[in-house]
Amino acid sequence: MSITQALNTAAAGLRATQAGLSLVASNVANAQTAGYVRKSLVLTTTTSNSMANGVAVSGVNRELDTYLQRQLRVENAGGAYANLRADFYAMLQQIYGQPGSSNSLETVFGNFTSAVQSLVTSPDSAAARSMVLNNAQVLTQALNGATASIQALRADAEGGLADAAAAANAAMQKIADLNVQLSGRDISNTSDAALADQRDYYIDQLSELMDIQVVQGESGQLNVFTNSGVQLVGTTAAKLTFNAQGTVNATTRWSADPSESTLGTLTLVSASGNTLDLIATNSIRSGKIAAYIDMRDNVLVEAQNQLDALASTMARALSDVNVEGSAVTAGPQDGYDVDTAGLLNGDRINLTYTDVLTGTQHRVSIVRVDDPSVLPLGNGATADPGDEVIGVDFSGGLASVAAQLNAYFGGSLDFSVQGASTLRVLDDGGANTTNVDGLSVTQTATALAGGDPAIALFTDGYTPYTGAFGANGSQSVGFAGRISVNPALLADPSKLVGYDASTSIGDPTRPSLIYDRLTSASYDYSGTVGLGSAAAPFNSSLPGYLRQVLSTQGAAASNAQSLADGQSVVVNALKERVQQASGVNIDEEMSNLIALQTAYGANARVLTAVRDILDLLLNM
Image (cartoon, rainbow, N blue to C red):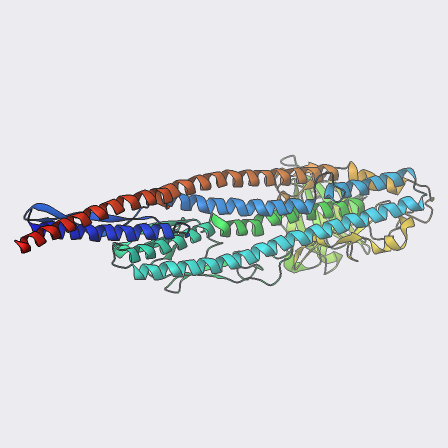
């Protein structure tokens, strides 16, 4: 090796070790910087005349395991989804109250039924009557407060979606900007590597908000898609828009039809101006955004439905009065008359008839409707899976009702009006294809002393609760937030016992009816409460239903927390592996520093030796 080659080789070694020292310093300085990936030099041997004679820095390598990175992003989305749901479920459990505590919903309901039981044994006690009403008010206030709290959680989810959309937009724009800056580069120097670190950092942020996949594009750019295939980022970024609504309550619901939706929806606007409703297309399936959507539109809506079912069943259980029709005969036709004078909007006529040709018995619920815009009603209007629901417009009078029913049944049954308020239904007489088996009405008691022990103890503010259907949907929606103790009963507590003018002050008839219907009688609950289904609804007493709701919600909260804990273990394990592969290890960097220091000294000695040789040659 010539002296010149030795000089050049030593100088190259010094330059390489200087670059290495600089990189070690950068690694150590950024050891705690979020998103920083450890860097190492890419060194190549230089040659001259087919002989290795030096070293050159050809680039900077990011010590990154892309497989682990991809897995971590997937689990990040799942972890954020699970954690957020667990947090919401924990808050929902607080609304129901700690089991056994004095303010839990189950305890409050139990105190109310216990007060009624005391009234059964002491109907003449003014203190017992007062205790019943006081506990009834505590129960209604608990339901009102639980509704307000659930809707506040839904409002939090609505606000969370707006914040998440803004955060996603910021991250996507940063990724697009960095894509442009890194376009056409192979990330071979420290400045480009730093930009790549920043890009990965913002992609990681985006992965907590939604499930994404990253595809390497041409010219060094990274294309980001949702797992459903919707592109979010290329050289330009799409934009998320969220039309947040000002008020969230029990009646506000999201709908794929913008004209019906009363909650905000998440829309993707592409760089070309095309729009896509990400909620309607189920394009986001994990991450915080998916969790917010699930809680706002599913979990919390179901929780509200459960409270509404409890409130509405309580109200109707105590106020429903069943009046059987009277058998009549008109020539060859047989049937029944029933008085409809007491029917309110939402009350129903119950018809049973048999199709003689097939031997099939049919049960029909004819529901009074005063707003024809809500017609037709579906069979889901009642919780009974075996009945056929017919909504009939009563706004035109009873003759119009009979005409509507005749048109519906097409002559197989004969409906007519008798007197002012009596509806008659007859079979088809000589044709002998149908037989009328029974006719009755289920109507709401409104008078506290109307001669029937049924009582409207609970009302919708000052309005009787009937489950009526109107322009805003069923009266049952959000009823738990409006249920109250009948103001007329608060003004005259004696009506808890006296159901007509002749009732003695010690008559237990009405208190016994209230207690039996609250504790013993069984009711069907709509499939919307998440127990059972439309075809096989959950059937139970009110205490059994409440226990099942609280048990189901408690199990769901426990499962959500278990999922979050498990997901946290997975995410932390992956983060540790990524840190081991890509993070800065100070001890390792110090070891590298010593090695570079040694190499630097060795190259310097070579230069010193060359200098001494040159000095010797010059002095000869």
